[in-house]
Image (cartoon, rainbow, N blue to C red; front, side, top):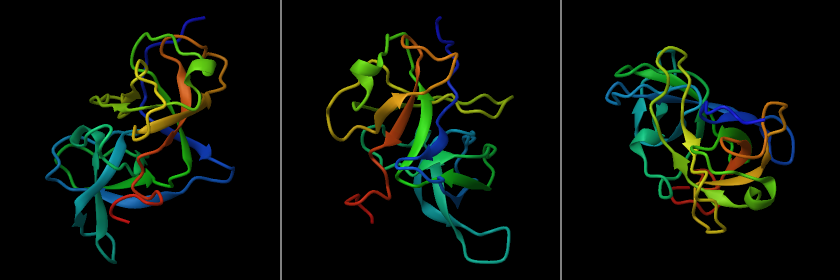
Length: 186
C-alpha cells in the first residue's frame, strides 16, 4: 500500500507521558496578511491584540510562513482558521509535550527503524483556502541526530492507511519550543 501525498499540517493527538493536550488563546493581527490555517505551526509574535471580549489583550502569534525553520522557537499548532489581513483569535495547542501528527514532504521512503528518535525541520506552505486546512509538513529527507532541529519523530502514526514509505505520517514532538526549559525568552 502506498500513502497519499496529502499534507494536512500538524494536528495534536495527545501528550507525551499521557493526559490531555492543552490549548491557549492567542491572536493573529490584521497586519499579518497571510491566512492562518488549521494545523499551521505558529510562533509568538511581538504584538498583543485587544480581546473582542472583555479582558486583557491577547498575546500575538504568527505562522511558520513568517518564521525560520531550525531557528525560530515554535508555540505549537493552530486549531482554527484565521482569514488573511484579519485580526482573529487563534486557539493553539501550545504545551511543549504535545504530540502532533504530520506528513513527510516528499517521496523519501521513511521507516520506523531509520526515523524514530531523529530530528528534522518543518516545511512551510500555503494552506487550502477551500478546506481551511494547512499543508505544512516535515522535511522527510533530512532526519538526523543533530540537536537544534524543529521536531523529533516519536513513532509512525498507527492508522490502517499509513504505511512505511513515501509520505508516511509520523507522531512528532516540537523540540524547538518557546515554552521548553532553557528556551530564550522564558
